[in-house]
Image (spheres, chains in turn cyan, green):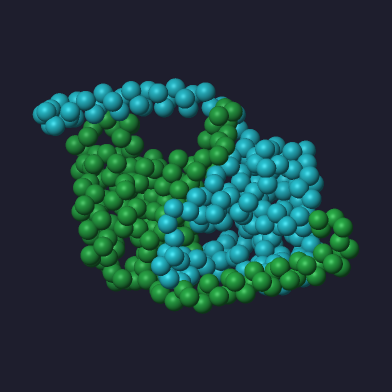
Length: 207
Length: 207
């Protein structure tokens, strides 16, 4: 179709199309006026759940906002991310809880204790009026194993989280109850993974 | 089922299950021995494509590795991320090309020129032996509009990219030809978005 057009006709057609697209986009944006703290969930089997959450944390830091990061599962953490976060001690609170993935410890009672301690830190950070962004990394794993009651978490987020505080929750298998109360949910879907062809975890990519 | 078990029985059962899980996981990890620079693609309609890519960039910075970030579409960029990247001038090369989203400029020839200039910078960064990680942010958008020939991009990545350099390409609608040659592809799938309920773009979340 466009093959029969001169370059000038193609350009004119393109300009017209883009003009319509911009008008439609501006119209939609004009209807978005509410500002509020969001409950954000990153789930799915693909990569990027924690990485995107840390990316948002770095954004907040870039804007000069105070943030907190709570680690619910040890070993899920990235030494690279930690090194960058530690460059901003005046803005960043890190609570690294947990004793390792559950398949490392094999001790359910200990895991439950760690989950409860991490949740207590998370609640403190969320209620802190100076902190506007709290990342609860791998909380979904802990909820999935019922180390924390899901009702307690959803009820706290709905009733006690300050209006203007954002929280981000990561991990596979997000519970339906959490998705129900969340504002923004993204499923990171695995399309292709190099592990399948024998490539190992590499510095700066996986850790 | 677990309801009839004593807490001690539940714990023992859990320990056994986790032990098996750890053994299976260790066995799989032992087969992963190849180390190589990956071609990584973040696509899909959901959020987190660029954010996760920037998260990986921050990881690299945390490990003290040099990185480059090439912006193919202006306006896609986050002032927060930029502020943090600029804190590491000795490690970070930023090339912000482009004149705005295509529906802003409505000028196809100008868009093509910008795309070509950005691609030239990207190739330079990828070939730089000191740089091991190159983020080509929103390259998929440019490829989708055929502002750059897809064959040129895939051929360069397959034949000229140094073995140990990672590249990350973001943007919706990744072309099949790109997915074909990529090592790691993740589709960020939108499950729930606050825009639907009238919430506007917010500092540190969207920008």
